[in-house]
Length: 327
Image (cartoon, rainbow, N blue to C red; front, side, top):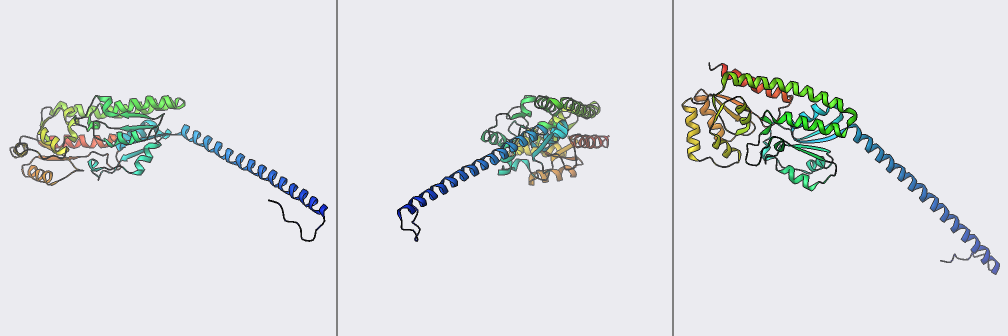
């Protein structure tokens, strides 16, 4: 677009001078714009490089772990120590894990995870769906069911299986050593500390088994099933427990058999899931107390203020105290 002629100038040579001035002004503006743009790009590039550098440094300092259940999160923290940041999805002991629904925050947590730990065996099927929707090249997934050979249809409360937590601990320690070799000795030491502490729990289980193997017990759900088996107990009414766990109605015969085992004093302990109670559970608890059958509540989530070791030890101590009082 041609610049307008100054109103006081009507001579031809004035047009030439004006054009030269306008060209100089446009050239200077273009050079300034190019210099400014170059400077902005340099600043943005430096900021991006700093961001990438900072992100890399942070990633080297901590490994981000997401655990579906809080006892696996506790285990991850014990093994990783100060070199990991852990997020547990199911962590409220007052909630029913079977009613859990995923959210955007759950998806975001998994998207940034470098290591994911979950139960498997169809206990937390939502994890598979979330992981498939969030691809990550360097992410490693540790599934408890895979480590102990459990499959869909088996009792999914695998953390009460004495083999599960040590298997996860060993697998996690090896993965952390591979990702962070500079701190490998620390991961090895943490694993040894956990194995020693859990070894004491195994000794307590063995002590109960030595005294009370063959004791008939029952439960409203198979939550404590693996631990009861490890203690050598005979678990009655298993079909009823599976029906309850799967939110299906137990058959009349299953209900009658369960009630009879309480009324006739055949079972010595009734284990119940204190996180999940309904009318049937409440009625059976009342019947057990009326029949002088001891009742012990167990949980599917690690209670607040507890560790794996104190949680398990407390439950084992309660079982032993209950059986001692019956002799």
